[in-house]
Image (cartoon, rainbow, N blue to C red; front, side, top):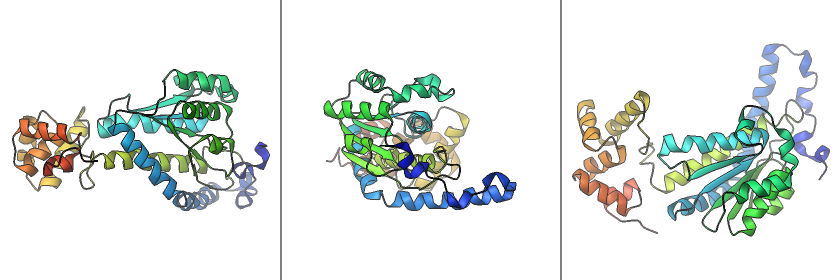
Length: 302
């Protein structure tokens, strides 16, 4: 696949003469093009939904979500992986990322690694992907050798594989079980896939992990009840969640959270089900952490 044939590399007629524009004109052009991203992602919702269910089942059964990417795509993957523990109290092992060039590539470009199939295979092999895992490759072009090789290797080892790309009919799509394709069109600055393409990838990774964690019961109603209360902001967020979910005053919320060991899920089950801390802990254990099922005492479900 010739890179010049990719939609994401095509010059954008809407930004012709871009370097002659005023600051406001530049902002308007970018904003106008950005409005196309959500529509492109919308067309991929069926594939996104299927991957959400894959990830939820994988995590429930002790597996992992492993993202792999390079350049801007790898940085988007790392952001989503790193935000799951504080927002959903997951283990850092549950949602992982692999970046071409390693962690140093997050801040400094190590783009040459993108071209190495050998390094892609080596880096994913170190994680020992298995049938329990879901591996998602991110590449705006859909042709990055590092990512294609890593996803193909994971698929050979039995992992379920998906990709997030912005072009149709790519090698990465062929290497994956499911291709999530957000055709955002040409970038405002030709080939600068840190713009619309990266925005679409951020939207999609948000959907996948938020959707999976919600399916697992780590969200109650639309409240982030599994928040990891490790600083003053997150403690206040946890108190506020309990106040809204249970329609109680602040003092009662603070007292219950303290008695629940600073666990919002335990406190919520205590209040909603009218049980003590040991019973709330038992219910959450039986429901695999699913807060609603713990409140209703329904066990783990299917």
